[in-house]
Length: 223
Image 1 (cartoon, helix red, strand yellow):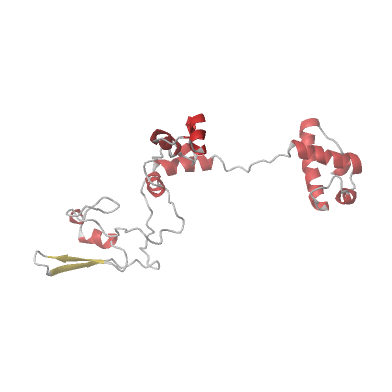
Image 2 (cartoon, rainbow, N blue to C red):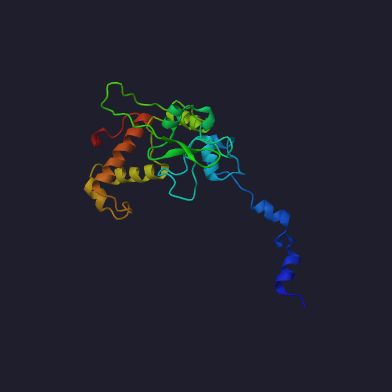
């Protein structure tokens, strides 16, 4: 005897889950900003894509789970510094500037004996006359540059309009009560959303301004 679920699959073969159908349903889709669609790699994680675009995935930084190489890399190691420079290519003065405060590099010989210790350079005193603020001169990546250009074009305040349905409702207020906002407030039939007197007045004033722009001055006594 055929089970009910098997009979249902025979009637509708589309219910059968095959590998080809499952892969199609689980395809990764890009849901971010349209300007970054061409720059997004679905094979990478969100954090990796943000890093490639010059953005940050967490505004408050990473609290854990990531081992970050904060010291300049070694040519004999697999990882290098963020800047791509190795210790062997840097002078001791450059190393001292590259090392964060509170850290240092211990150099040893082939036998493991300590031959040199390089500590971080002392931070400059802002009260000194020759103090200069270091400006990050790294060029911005393509993703960050695209979003900044887009944001600069959207500086203007967005103008909001009264919807068609709200215009009709406000016009009904005016036709029934004129400029009597107290009567509008107590009108249970029209004031279904229980707007206050001031809210009704502000909405009607905005509606009349838009109406003046489209049809010319109307209801001057309500201004």
